[in-house]
Amino acid sequence: KAGVTQTPRYLIKTRGQQVTLSCSPISGHRSVSWYQQTPGQGLQFLFEYFSETQRNKGNFPGRFSGRQFSNSRSEMNVSTLELGDSALYLCASSDLQGGTEAFFGQGTRLTVV
Amino acid sequence: SQQGEEDPQALSIQEGENATMNCSYKTSINNLQWYRQNSGRGLVHLILIRSNEREKHSGRLRVTLDTSKKSSSLLITASRAADTASYFCATPRKGGADGLTFGKGTHLIIQP
Image (cartoon, rainbow over all chains, first blue to last red; front, side, top):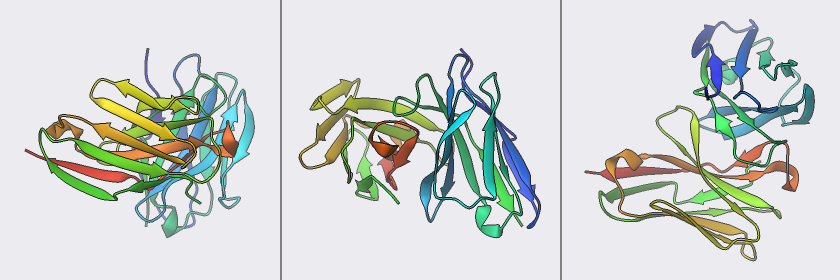
């Protein structure tokens, strides 16, 4: 079974731009969660999707958004990028609605300059 | 805010020794998980322990859970250089579902 795939692996953007990150979950998994990891704040929950519905959202500004498609693939978008958005963005999938073993992708390293 | 807090923040031991990491959490949970992360890459699930379990083993890993103290420990026995990584405990958000809340992690270094 293929693992969780995140694209792209690395990204450099300029302040003010927007970015879209993609996550393909393990086949059959319907729950996809996104996390931001920074040295200062650690791993922070962004949002969770289950069957195309956002079920929970972390404490991030509205510039951070996401969606899930009918094939369970998910995207997250960050608009009006700030330097502080530089981070490793991790996506995880699970076969139930959260709270169980999560399988993580390798992450997308976003650098905002 | 962080639900789990790992202790210690960093740990350096000799290969072959045992490593123990602790995690404390704040609210009631129905399970707790431990993950490993190698050098800024994705997290790898190690073990999940449910609230009605007190101890669980997986290979060289032993996890305990004390719900009365809201704490868990991860023991890695006979450590190897390949165990060098950051270890995180994670609890379900909202007590049961919809994503995980992670602690800040313990950075473990195994000296050869």
